[in-house]
Image (cartoon, rainbow, N blue to C red):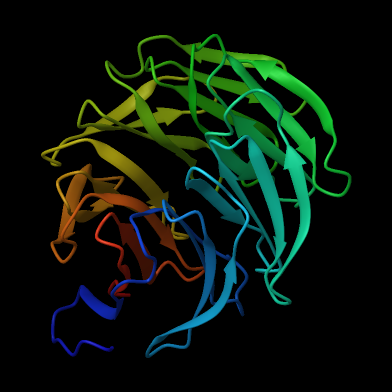
Length: 307
């Protein structure tokens, strides 16, 4: 369904009941020619979608997880997707063929959060411990782990240049590791409540963090200094995503809104109010002009930003 509007910021696509329960995560492949969107839900499924510019088309439905899908990620080409669940399973999917490539058993820990490295070779998985585990995509083997110092790792993210890994915890701690796994920075009081999401800027120099304390913070990756704190949501901030222009980002919250921010000016430039329940995930396409959002209301929405 396409929604006509004359606003500069507009919602251009809506798919109600995209899943059979709340949708907790979304990823959009960043290849210039890819319009593959991946979603994960409390209904235990991962689903793939195609945005053709006018409507959202269903492609594949992946089954196999138990206890809900908490995180999804996809490589730049939109060829391989990964998903994780508190069933302690990480699954690797072939997006184009719609088949399971590999199932990785993470052991006796919950795979709470997952991030695929930019080169598509490694999977970082955070859990209900102070360890973040690094698995090889091809073999599915555990190669190493890093210790975050946080009692529960709630978010992980690779930098786009593949040089750093950021980890965040339920206790508000943020840790930054270099590519060798050495701890560069530990920010002990980054937030006063759990950190739900972390995202590097496109140039890998900045880090956004979203928290239950209702704030979004911007950190300098090299110095770990807090450059800016963004206020405006009236609930937990559950998700953030950078636009490819490196100047704007989006956020989603338990207050049911999606906000667009100007990072340089420190201001909110637009708020979408269409969701009927808390917004768990947002993801930009490669151009930075389209934004996908997902919610406990079971809908997948596509928003358009002005050039």
